[in-house]
Length: 211
Image (tube, rainbow, N blue to C red; front, top):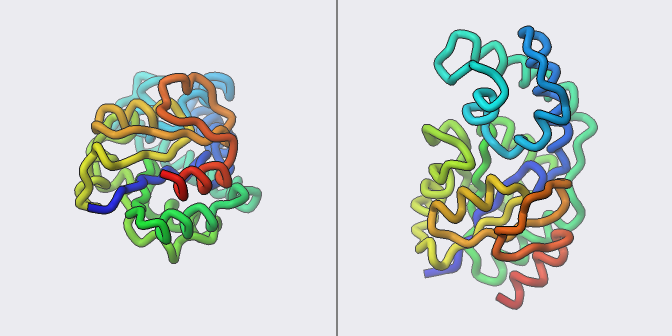
């Protein structure tokens, strides 16, 4: 059974965490809510089903939820032209596959946005196996995304690693019985529980070659 690497996108492959936070602040403001950037930014990494209830009294299924989600999408679309992939993204994925790792994407975002971000990062052609928020009932920090990704890969959790950038990746991975490595590119803190920590994607690439 091949080793499995489950990849996050935002803050791991693409420098998009601040853009997500700004988009949420705008979406909340349009609907009369007042969370500011400092409140939203630490929650980036969760899906909307987790993030919105953390900051408001709105739950998924509430009639106010979809307007918030739609507002975020419009605001994030405005941010998209400024987004950039982190250095070494394609080299990381190529190295993982050449070293025998089975690589699956697992993102709390929606599938269409995942496609666009992976295209932006020039790795869409290398990563056909993907799991997004539309495939599960709950996003990170719940383990649902990773459990589906493990099933898609036919993987043993004990032989799998998550590569992410937030404490929500770490929490979800551990709940799924996996280890989690984090890359410190998304400007996040509170990552002391990660099983491995790397400064950049080139360091992760070198680790994959040795592992």
